[in-house]
Length: 289
Ligand code: FAD
Image (cartoon, rainbow, N blue to C red; front, side, top):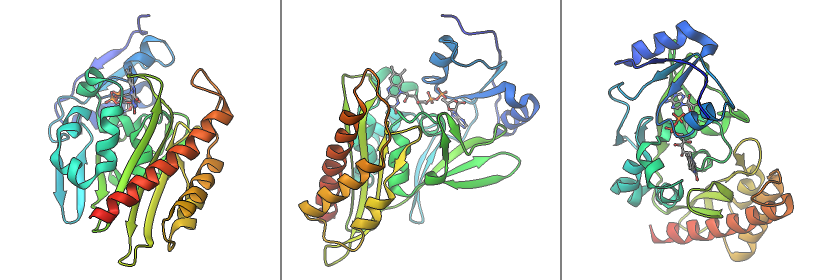
């Protein structure tokens, strides 16, 4: 299908882009990689009178390590993340996930900013950002930071205001004895997750869990933070029995809907299995650091 007509704007600066958003209000939408937005427009699931393409805005494409924080510019493409040595060595949870997102063509265009700002519970990076304790930086009338676990409000609904642009993702650099993993089940390449789990843990010198983040993809209208399971694991030895119990608690928090990828019962069971897998791998990796 052909999208409804829109005016296309291609600002050269962030300031200009923000002015366009302010001017056109609810009628305007930011365009980054276009890999989610354009299909939606073509299927006429949404329409906007103004698209503000931020691909020419400079300074939004970077991966920097600074004072204990990994800063990723919102316009950083998935393909860039896939090739990054810092991501591979320091944030393996993200390195696990990126090659499983869509296909190489989509990853060449799709951005991390678009993935987390989209508000689709099928996107993989929101759950990972929640597990990592990341923060999203938005520019509008002022700069503000929003913790990833407070960003998702409903289906395609986020804490971003219409006049704001997501500019950066800030991930606290995992301390020593940390490890993370992402486990995803999908039917075929290019498909979204049937279910997926992100787990990030930091172990104490004794081997108990000092901090942990667990979140699920495609398990409800928003990414699901498994807070009960996180609380349960903290302070405990992450042995098979404890991990199995935490995985059950995480699955209990999921609220998927039935569709062509499976029934509710099947998806909840997959959430349990994948959480256990991700936790085991995260703990194993933490033990090696
Ligand atoms: P766009 O499509 O340009 O924008 C998406 C939304 O985010 C829009 O609402 C837009 O206004 C908003 N937005 C974008 N950037 C910003 C910003 N900086 N500030 C404020 N708002 C912004 N994703 C997965 O996670 N896992 C998958 O398995 C997967 N499979 C896919 C398979 C196919 C065939 C396709 C086409 C896509 C798939 N995707 C998948 C989605 C893909 O990862 C998208 O690239 C991503 O969801 C959106 O990124 P984008 O840069 O293309 O954003």
